[in-house]
Length: 251
Image (tube, rainbow, N blue to C red; front, side, top):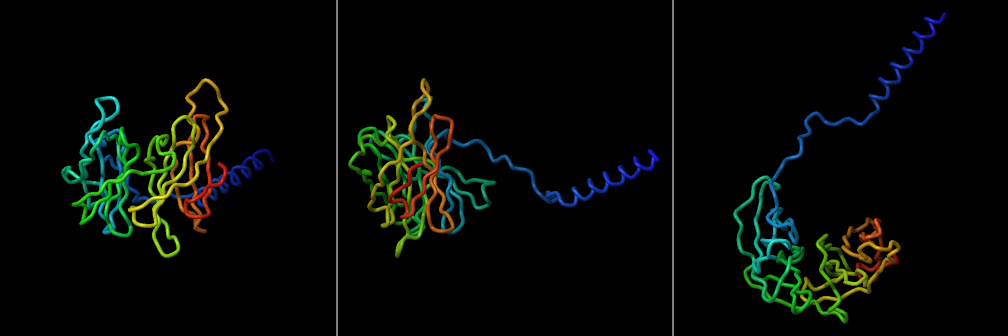
């Protein structure tokens, strides 16, 4: 009797395992392993962008914070095979002043480049290309409190439909726990507006107090924009904009 019970239990066990294996997600047999594509040229302030024709561009400065800072010149490399091979580095633009890092987006309207960077003397700057990246104009990202804006963040610039125009939304954060917000433009980066800031309380003492910093964005299916914020309190915070980046909910 005991042997019959054990045999019955074994049959049920094997059937359950087989049924579980059949229902488990399967990894396709033709999946390729990750490919190593090389080290980036710079440790910060780089942008990986897709042009309107599908070509990839890697935009960067040479240098880093720990070894003499960054070059005034911004460079780019291109790839036509999804990043497996890259062209030589070409000069994109020389940024005047005392520049540091950079962050770029390719316009979904004109295909021109909009480059953001921090100038030690003027604060946040925008360089916009014309005539197929050959000519450049520079403007200060003016806001009523521009002196306290620490950086244009390097997460992403989001292009969204806004009534009869394409709006570009990019994030910034301030120093001294002054919060984060967005620059946005309905004129292909030629003029800019700024949102009100959102803040996050610092609840942990004796650590670096950041407030709300480093916003990054995603557009939701209903057209709202979701913003994620980091903080030194060991949490990620989120905020929602229902007006395409002009105002934000409490994180």
